[in-house]
Length: 201
Image 1 (cartoon, rainbow, N blue to C red):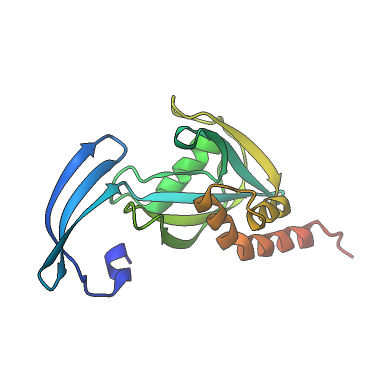
Image 2 (image 1 turned 180 degrees about the horizontal axis):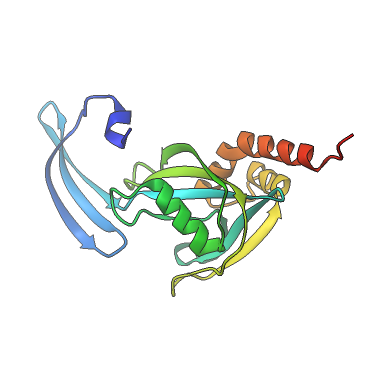
């Protein structure tokens, strides 16, 4: 099911005219003239950006792999889950998730679970993202970072990461949401690991 099918409602506004105030390889700044009904029109400016994926990587040892990345707009180091844009509008989100896990943390996984979809700051940009849980992650390859990416890989106990998310220790909101959405599945996997490690009678 795609985004338009999920909405399930008649579009109340009509786009009369669109123009781009700025275009870049990563995102565009767009201005629309919009008919909002009753003969009224408004001008709406927003950021247009490719769809994205966010992946919560759970290792075979019950750890979660995060990245600590420098983000220039906020001039700060930010704790995040691996994430990135789909390379084309029709790219399978699962393939984009696999690419981000390999490139940003140097990992492969046994299973990929799709947890949901969400909008980010829907008043300001059209970003529509997918959240995945990667189960059985092994860090078995080198990271393949872009020249502009400045990040560190962190491997932390899953319980510690869940605690961070609950007490606002993950300041990047999309990543915190991804971890919290994955929490029931993470706890289920941790329980399985506990059972597997217990000595058999």
